[in-house]
Length: 573
Image (cartoon, rainbow, N blue to C red; front, side):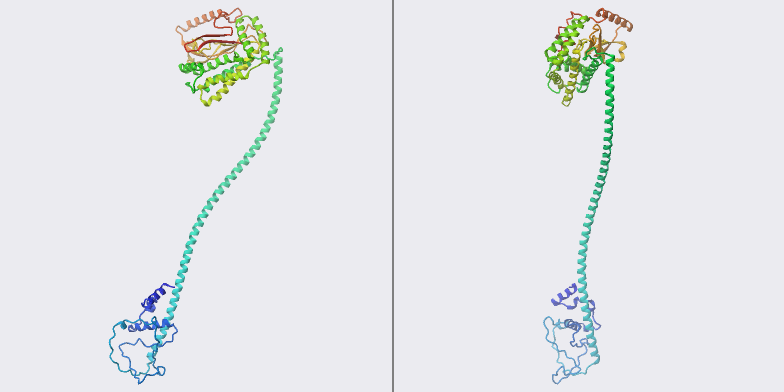
């Protein structure tokens, strides 16, 4: 129900003016201000009875200043029998239908003066027309009031519908916002999926290209394999032709174990290179210990390196060479041929030294050595377990000077060096020639000696630009030299040659006299020494009474100032 109607009814229930909630047109005053209150009463009655009520209406708009015309009646007459006079015959009203008292009615009543009896007056046509007009006006006003209430109810209904539509609109706005958010999410997901799809397509294309490249590489690999097989066949043919050519140029004379000097020199140089590489690659300088030292020789090595830091790498090379010579070339612990092999090597060393200048005895020794060495090698051979033990012992002595991450590479490299030395030892033991591994100057703290260009190479020098004005002194001999006596065919034992020179650390000393005088004195001294050392055949002599050699070719002396045992080792095979 519209708010106006509700407020109007609420006021009626409270006893207030019923027309306070009506439209302004209903509440407007008429032209006659004296008819306000009666007019309101008539409108209320019309409102209660409806717009089509036929209740009689009296003229309440007549000016109150005019006294009513008295109607004279002798007796009460029936209202219906009186013609031309309208009499209000109203029923008793209910409490809710009673007309609210006007302001005049609420005033205290004063006793009216007795009025004379009214005299009947004839009906006034003008008054009747006024009443009819007012009645029609009230009907129109009531009809307009009903239409106003209907319109107000319709407006309230429309407002309620508008509120509901507004709520629905708000809900639709929220749903629209949520849909937009979902659409953005879906667009983002769609974009990501599109990017993934593009990446997938790119990866698939890359995989296809890789597969094509793989197929092409396989074809090329097969082609190269065929070419390699073809080249291998050609190489085999050329190798056979080369072997036949060598046989024609150098007949074997029935000796399948004969080796060339180039092979010996190659293995010697390979071993020397690996030892030098070990000293420069695995050991950090200045030298330090990473674990407790067990072997006293390692302690002496550390002391030597600390005394001469520039020569630390060469001291390490010397240490390894001394172990290789004493363990491998002397067949320590029955490395080759067991006790027989070790005894044979010692015997060859003694007899070669004693008969150094006797070619006939050396020839006999060569034949004996060749046959015994061949039999020992075929029946017993090389003991790989002993070789592994010797290599491990050397590695355990040196690993205290190497970081832990380099232990395994050092062990592997030392094993390769020991294997190469063992193979070289077996070749020299079975050869007809007599081989000498000279270690006469392999001492860490030996007195300086003159540089011998025929047997030595300079491994290191501090002032190479002063060679012309200085005399070279060997302060440290790093490796031994390898000397060959005779040939692989078992003859010419009066000839010797150096296949592997010793590596020397050279310090230069300035000449005190003039260059010319010193040169002449040096030449005279060399000629005198050469004439004293050479025999009739032009070879260098060896004093048989020299105390530096024992029966086994090893001299054990007293310890020097650094604690090293002065040991001169010459291995003759």
